[in-house]
Image (cartoon, rainbow, N blue to C red):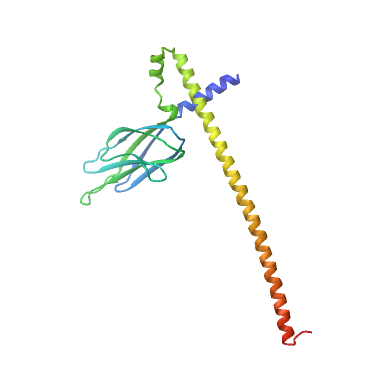
Length: 206
Protein backbone atom coordinates (compact mmCIF):
# COMPACT_ATOMS: atom_id res chain seq x y z
CA UNK A 1 0.00 0.00 0.00
CA UNK A 2 2.78 2.41 0.94
CA UNK A 3 4.69 1.48 -2.19
CA UNK A 4 1.65 2.19 -4.35
CA UNK A 5 1.16 5.55 -2.65
CA UNK A 6 4.83 6.39 -3.29
CA UNK A 7 4.43 5.59 -7.00
CA UNK A 8 1.30 7.75 -7.17
CA UNK A 9 3.22 10.65 -5.57
CA UNK A 10 6.01 10.25 -8.12
CA UNK A 11 3.50 10.23 -10.97
CA UNK A 12 1.93 13.42 -9.65
CA UNK A 13 5.37 15.01 -9.33
CA UNK A 14 6.28 14.05 -12.87
CA UNK A 15 2.99 15.48 -14.12
CA UNK A 16 3.76 18.85 -12.56
CA UNK A 17 7.54 18.75 -13.21
CA UNK A 18 7.62 21.00 -16.27
CA UNK A 19 6.92 24.68 -15.70
CA UNK A 20 4.58 26.48 -18.10
CA UNK A 21 3.66 30.13 -17.67
CA UNK A 22 1.90 32.77 -19.72
CA UNK A 23 2.06 36.47 -18.98
CA UNK A 24 1.46 39.87 -20.55
CA UNK A 25 4.40 42.10 -21.41
CA UNK A 26 3.74 45.83 -21.52
CA UNK A 27 5.46 47.97 -24.19
CA UNK A 28 9.06 49.00 -23.42
CA UNK A 29 9.21 46.93 -20.24
CA UNK A 30 11.13 43.90 -19.06
CA UNK A 31 9.86 40.89 -17.13
CA UNK A 32 12.13 38.23 -15.61
CA UNK A 33 11.47 34.74 -14.28
CA UNK A 34 13.93 33.28 -11.78
CA UNK A 35 14.49 29.76 -10.46
CA UNK A 36 17.13 27.94 -8.40
CA UNK A 37 18.83 25.21 -10.42
CA UNK A 38 21.37 22.62 -9.32
CA UNK A 39 24.80 22.29 -10.90
CA UNK A 40 25.33 20.40 -14.16
CA UNK A 41 21.67 20.35 -15.13
CA UNK A 42 20.36 20.72 -18.65
CA UNK A 43 17.66 23.36 -18.97
CA UNK A 44 15.40 23.43 -22.03
CA UNK A 45 12.70 25.90 -22.87
CA UNK A 46 10.13 26.71 -25.51
CA UNK A 47 8.63 30.16 -26.00
CA UNK A 48 6.08 31.92 -28.15
CA UNK A 49 5.08 35.59 -28.26
CA UNK A 50 2.09 37.26 -29.89
CA UNK A 51 3.06 39.04 -33.08
CA UNK A 52 2.61 42.81 -33.23
CA UNK A 53 3.96 44.61 -36.33
CA UNK A 54 6.79 46.98 -35.50
CA UNK A 55 7.29 45.71 -31.93
CA UNK A 56 10.32 43.65 -30.92
CA UNK A 57 10.87 41.25 -28.03
CA UNK A 58 14.30 39.97 -26.99
CA UNK A 59 15.17 37.38 -24.36
CA UNK A 60 18.27 36.64 -22.32
CA UNK A 61 19.14 33.94 -19.79
CA UNK A 62 21.83 34.59 -17.18
CA UNK A 63 23.00 33.75 -13.67
CA UNK A 64 23.34 35.98 -10.62
CA UNK A 65 26.87 37.00 -11.67
CA UNK A 66 25.58 38.35 -14.98
CA UNK A 67 27.05 35.60 -17.15
CA UNK A 68 24.95 35.29 -20.31
CA UNK A 69 24.00 31.68 -21.03
CA UNK A 70 21.78 32.21 -24.06
CA UNK A 71 20.11 35.17 -25.73
CA UNK A 72 18.23 36.06 -28.90
CA UNK A 73 16.72 39.16 -30.46
CA UNK A 74 13.53 39.64 -32.48
CA UNK A 75 11.90 36.46 -31.18
CA UNK A 76 8.51 35.08 -32.18
CA UNK A 77 8.59 31.35 -31.50
CA UNK A 78 11.43 28.98 -30.74
CA UNK A 79 13.42 26.89 -28.30
CA UNK A 80 16.54 27.35 -26.18
CA UNK A 81 18.76 25.26 -23.92
CA UNK A 82 21.73 25.75 -21.61
CA UNK A 83 23.70 23.84 -18.99
CA UNK A 84 23.97 25.11 -15.43
CA UNK A 85 27.59 25.12 -14.26
CA UNK A 86 27.00 25.70 -10.53
CA UNK A 87 24.06 25.80 -8.16
CA UNK A 88 22.62 29.26 -8.57
CA UNK A 89 19.49 31.28 -9.21
CA UNK A 90 19.10 31.55 -12.98
CA UNK A 91 16.76 33.97 -14.67
CA UNK A 92 15.33 34.49 -18.13
CA UNK A 93 14.19 37.98 -19.06
CA UNK A 94 11.93 39.14 -21.88
CA UNK A 95 12.33 42.75 -23.03
CA UNK A 96 9.82 44.67 -25.16
CA UNK A 97 11.04 47.37 -27.53
CA UNK A 98 8.69 49.74 -29.31
CA UNK A 99 9.77 52.56 -31.67
CA UNK A 100 9.16 56.08 -30.37
CA UNK A 101 6.79 56.94 -33.22
CA UNK A 102 4.59 53.88 -32.62
CA UNK A 103 1.94 53.33 -29.99
CA UNK A 104 2.79 50.22 -28.00
CA UNK A 105 0.49 47.24 -27.56
CA UNK A 106 0.56 44.66 -24.78
CA UNK A 107 1.94 41.31 -25.98
CA UNK A 108 1.41 37.82 -24.59
CA UNK A 109 4.39 35.60 -23.83
CA UNK A 110 4.14 31.86 -23.16
CA UNK A 111 7.10 29.95 -21.77
CA UNK A 112 7.57 26.28 -20.95
CA UNK A 113 10.76 25.09 -19.28
CA UNK A 114 12.17 21.70 -18.33
CA UNK A 115 15.27 20.81 -16.37
CA UNK A 116 17.24 17.75 -15.34
CA UNK A 117 15.28 14.54 -15.64
CA UNK A 118 12.42 16.34 -17.37
CA UNK A 119 14.61 16.94 -20.45
CA UNK A 120 15.18 13.24 -21.13
CA UNK A 121 13.34 11.59 -24.02
CA UNK A 122 12.24 8.30 -22.49
CA UNK A 123 10.46 7.27 -25.66
CA UNK A 124 13.78 7.37 -27.48
CA UNK A 125 15.51 5.54 -24.62
CA UNK A 126 12.82 2.86 -24.70
CA UNK A 127 13.15 2.38 -28.45
CA UNK A 128 16.94 2.26 -28.31
CA UNK A 129 16.98 -0.23 -25.42
CA UNK A 130 13.88 -2.10 -26.65
CA UNK A 131 12.06 -1.58 -23.37
CA UNK A 132 8.40 -2.24 -22.76
CA UNK A 133 6.13 0.75 -21.93
CA UNK A 134 5.95 -0.32 -18.29
CA UNK A 135 9.74 -0.57 -18.11
CA UNK A 136 10.03 2.93 -19.61
CA UNK A 137 7.64 4.26 -16.95
CA UNK A 138 9.65 2.55 -14.22
CA UNK A 139 12.85 4.04 -15.64
CA UNK A 140 11.23 7.49 -15.59
CA UNK A 141 10.08 6.99 -11.97
CA UNK A 142 13.54 5.77 -10.97
CA UNK A 143 15.23 8.83 -12.42
CA UNK A 144 12.59 11.09 -10.88
CA UNK A 145 13.03 9.52 -7.44
CA UNK A 146 16.82 9.95 -7.72
CA UNK A 147 16.30 13.61 -8.62
CA UNK A 148 14.01 14.11 -5.63
CA UNK A 149 16.54 12.46 -3.32
CA UNK A 150 19.29 14.75 -4.64
CA UNK A 151 17.06 17.76 -4.06
CA UNK A 152 16.45 16.68 -0.47
CA UNK A 153 20.17 16.13 0.09
CA UNK A 154 20.89 19.59 -1.27
CA UNK A 155 18.18 21.12 0.90
CA UNK A 156 19.61 19.37 3.96
CA UNK A 157 23.11 20.61 3.12
CA UNK A 158 21.84 24.18 2.73
CA UNK A 159 19.93 23.88 6.02
CA UNK A 160 23.12 22.73 7.78
CA UNK A 161 25.07 25.62 6.25
CA UNK A 162 22.41 28.10 7.35
CA UNK A 163 22.36 26.61 10.85
CA UNK A 164 26.15 26.86 11.12
CA UNK A 165 25.97 30.47 9.93
CA UNK A 166 23.27 31.27 12.50
CA UNK A 167 25.27 29.65 15.29
CA UNK A 168 28.40 31.61 14.33
CA UNK A 169 26.37 34.82 14.13
CA UNK A 170 24.79 34.17 17.54
CA UNK A 171 28.18 33.52 19.13
CA UNK A 172 29.60 36.71 17.60
CA UNK A 173 26.59 38.70 18.81
CA UNK A 174 27.05 37.22 22.31
CA UNK A 175 30.76 38.13 22.39
CA UNK A 176 29.99 41.61 21.08
CA UNK A 177 27.31 42.07 23.76
CA UNK A 178 29.71 40.98 26.50
CA UNK A 179 32.39 43.30 25.12
CA UNK A 180 29.90 46.19 24.98
CA UNK A 181 28.83 45.56 28.59
CA UNK A 182 32.46 45.51 29.73
CA UNK A 183 33.11 48.78 27.89
CA UNK A 184 30.05 50.40 29.47
CA UNK A 185 31.01 49.19 32.95
CA UNK A 186 34.56 50.44 32.45
CA UNK A 187 33.31 53.82 31.21
CA UNK A 188 30.87 54.13 34.11
CA UNK A 189 33.61 53.27 36.61
CA UNK A 190 35.96 55.82 35.03
CA UNK A 191 33.24 58.51 35.17
CA UNK A 192 32.56 57.83 38.87
CA UNK A 193 36.26 57.98 39.74
CA UNK A 194 36.78 61.12 37.64
CA UNK A 195 33.84 62.92 39.19
CA UNK A 196 34.96 61.85 42.65
CA UNK A 197 38.43 63.36 42.10
CA UNK A 198 36.88 66.47 40.56
CA UNK A 199 34.55 67.08 43.48
CA UNK A 200 37.39 66.46 45.94
CA UNK A 201 39.55 68.98 44.08
CA UNK A 202 36.73 71.54 44.31
CA UNK A 203 36.28 70.60 47.99
CA UNK A 204 32.63 69.77 47.37
CA UNK A 205 33.00 66.40 49.10
CA UNK A 206 35.46 65.08 51.65
